[in-house]
Length: 69
Image (cartoon, rainbow, N blue to C red; front, side, top):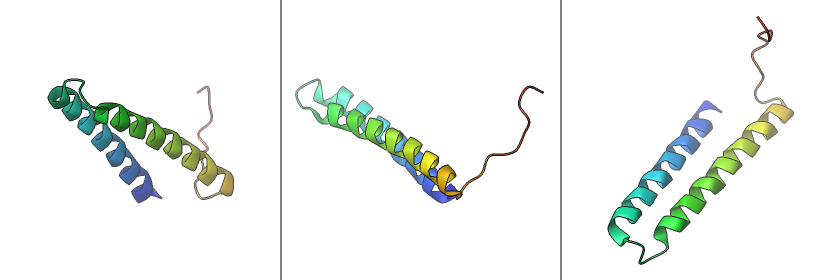
């Protein structure tokens, strides 16, 4: 589980870096930056939903730390 989440974070960061690269080199002539940012948003939403599903299925558990202390 830790490897999947770490891999998803690496892919999200890579998408942000590619969007920055396309922004600097394309100068608005192509839509590669937009597609990179859309990919980042899609990966972020997918990661969030995957973590919710994994918690619901019992693959991961919360830490049992009492709140308010």
